[in-house]
Image (tube, rainbow, N blue to C red; front, side, top):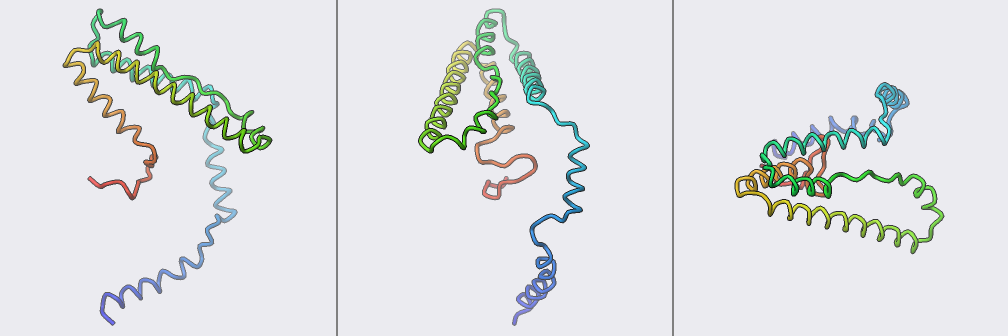
Length: 174
């Protein structure tokens, strides 16, 4: 047996008792501790979260407008862009969740397809608004807008990428 293989065997033997003790389920003490920590944090309502989201959106858009130095001739294009790309209030789907179990599979599929069509229409509207606004920008403004759009894309990421401190092991490393 090589030295590397024997080291691996020793490490595995030492680690085995730790793995055997971990049942995967949290102990009642850990669960109580977790729940008490969560109880200490205030829970925001849907309306509060939406208001905070709209406030952050307004702040980002004001910063973008200042960075782009929008002229008076471009103000109408800016306002149209803002109106068509403003975040929409999310509907509360709780009532739909309750009757989801009452629906048949084809009815659920129809509902999913309708929601997908709504999302596609909203995305199409945002794309058209962005293209229209982009055409009203000067070359220097387009360069700034492109840089900001890239930063926003990196902030929000691609679908499937993990956020909130988790990493994607399949993502290329830089």
